[in-house]
Length: 623
Image (tube, rainbow, N blue to C red; front, side, top):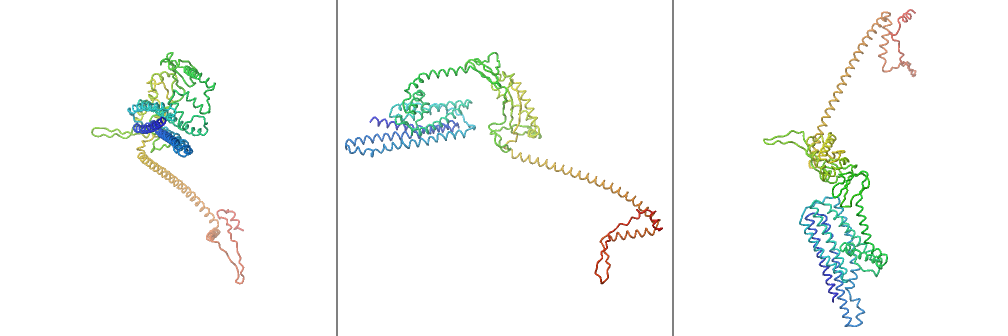
């Protein structure tokens, strides 16, 4: 009767824990909707994964309770009916069969599904939020509510863990350990959200990744438990596949060594913790750990400065030896936190980026953002100001771009960099914004876009260096680069139309200049050609006139010498010119004969009368 009451109480506690876990999961999710913290979303999943576990324990203890009732009924019937009914006992205990089927198939199957969820969901959450900025909404009431929930979860966890020490309630340990870890991370969530309200978001991200890694490790352990259950010895302690040893060690740190002993006994199948070697290690383990911790603490007295670094050694927060700079090597100091070392890499180039935030995009088009967040710089405009009756409007333009400042720490002014300013990087960034804004007010929009960007970057470098020296910042500016300059994305399409109109204007101007240059060149060429032709014609006509005059005189002399021959020659030359084309044939034949005689009348040029010497002609006539 007492066992039945304990089993009834066990499944009632498991049912209450399941409903409580549903409540926690809903509360965490509602909090996530309020503040948009990714840690609350993961904790909601962490609480929700316990619902099927607690429900399985509720079904398990309920079937054990029914199996116990059936067994008592069968024993009562056996007393009344005698030996014959005891032979049919196995056929009547249906609840026992269901209990065995649940322990053999249902629990491992559900555990396998939970293992997959513990692998997949945290991995997807971390992959989705990797490199993303959480849109956090501060709410000071959420941490207070989480502290209250932590107290409730912790009390419930310790109550169930106390019950699990009873042999019949041993399986309730998985609920107690799960709730204990849930209480621990609920407390961490409250602390991280509180620190987030004070401007320390890194703690929240650390707890976020720690919780996700823990869930993945528990999922791996669930899968490993299912596999090891097939190789478990018959003498080993029976454990449910979702009873996590990792969660047990985290929720009950006071039982770490006994739990470790149980794990070893379970894995090896015999009492390995009773061997002399284990007892020897157990007795000397704590002194060894203390010795290692002491040695690790003493190592904080060593300061290693690399070749590209310089360091200050502090004693109770003040630099020793009047702020002496320690170079590369190994130096001694008081252990932490009495002595501290501030190490700075003075040889490496550092960078500061101004004007944008977030990661750079894949495409650099004017119509798309180059970075996740871009600021608009105010820049001067050459357009005239417009005035009304009371106000004068000065035209300005907006420009988007990123300013890269490359600098290094000046070794000679390292003390100024380390102790003069609390946040030198923030100060340098503000100086960059200030000087770049001042310079842009005196620069033209289109000059920054194209021709004067390099000269403006050099001017900006000089101005930033002057301001850094004025504030004793202790740095040396190496280079300043202005890149990814473009109009704001909201006005990019309109600006492209303006640029297109300006480009078409320039194209028209260049076409007109090209036409003018082409036409002027052609006109100069035509004038030169006509002039050369006129000169050639003049020379040709004068030479021909002189030649005709000379020819006429020669002909006159020839005519005077022998007029008859002169006329005869002129007659033959006229006949020659007229018979030159087409070719003519003289056919001599009688009517009877049909022979064709072809005479080769190819011209044999007759000597020109001008080329004949008068003396020669005189001799021929005399003959």
